[in-house]
Image (cartoon, rainbow, N blue to C red; front, side):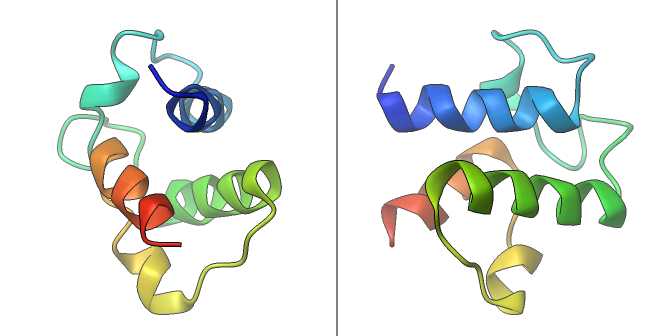
Length: 76
């Protein structure tokens, strides 16, 4: 697993503490009951802080899964 993936997993676990390390890569809006609009904003803030980046609103709206977040990071 890459350093970016590990950092992103830490961000997810900060926002969704009930997810274990192995569950995070499969996490999505439809699979995590606690994932609502507030959690999306908290996740975006955690990722921005961890990676030292700033998302646009339309990018935050695309943060609907771990894989989607990885793709957003890869595009930066």
